[in-house]
Image (cartoon, rainbow, N blue to C red):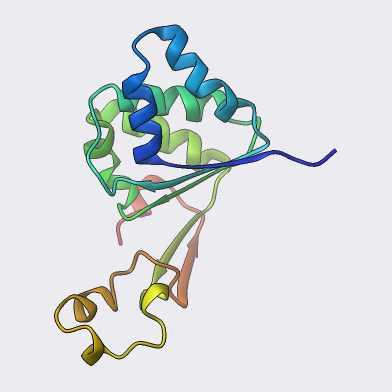
Length: 152
């Protein structure tokens, strides 16, 4: 048997949790994400979330902590996660669990999606996106340090 992996964007997770009106419904959303061998949570912080998202995210990360690998992608530095989960203490607890055994990779450089395009082909938007620092750039910085080192 092979390993199970799941991929979900933070917005998809927030939407599913928003539709779960009871704790049983919330557990129904979280159970497969807690049980899979590898979880990828994509685009954390790209879009605003409702206040109930932070506690559910904590429940997910804490439930997987020291049990199964979890990959999180975000365009926000770890120091900005308090705004995402709308609670500084909760953000600190999330970051603590992620960094305890985790590794942080900061990717900077041109957007992979715009590879091969010239800035002239897409006036305005392309110029600002070419160095957005959020998409698979070539100059990756690998750090294994604490949250105080998470500023870009």
